Length: 269
Image 1 (tube, rainbow, N blue to C red):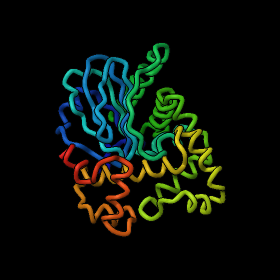
Image 2: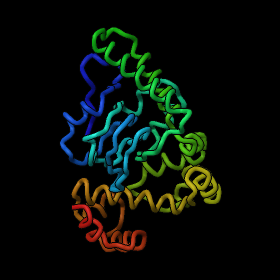
Image 3: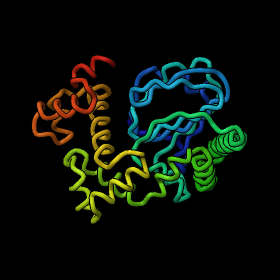
């Protein structure tokens, strides 16, 4: 799904409330080329992020990266605000690193002394968004700057650490580019002119996993997205992820998850 911002918003940043989301949402899963950041002020609900159910409570922060399969399971009683934007919308380089990282879906509770600043940042962004609707000639940098501040304020420490890990970011970007062709760490080490050990150290600092484990988990996640959200056949998934034949893909999937691709799909379809 591609994001189309409201007409007259040059910064391509859209702010809305959960009340507005309830009017628009059809209860279906989505996978977009855009990101969503949300703050829950009150109420309790549920969102599914890459097939994981996450309960939402007051002061929850929701981060839905580009490419993440998500579904708003229960937003009936939620009060708060969301911002929707493409990865290139932030103007601060450090914030753009976070938004251009491959899709991450997560929700967590805000640290108590951070909530007021987060809330004020979101409210200011929403006010500027509505001002831009009234006066489309407003400089687009205003929304991009406020979005950057919100992103940097909301991001948990582990994301900030991963974003600062340049070797891991190079590895992650290369994996995204060649995910449908190569699944071996040695290939990426040669491509990036690092040793496999250097990539593994960087991956461990960025994710707590070895480069091999990170790569395998990323392939599994993409397979899960294709099997359920896009309804691809076993043959189609095998071809799109660069496996020689469906049996090779099935063996890999079962080894990593303990389930056959068909059994896993049946859990969600």
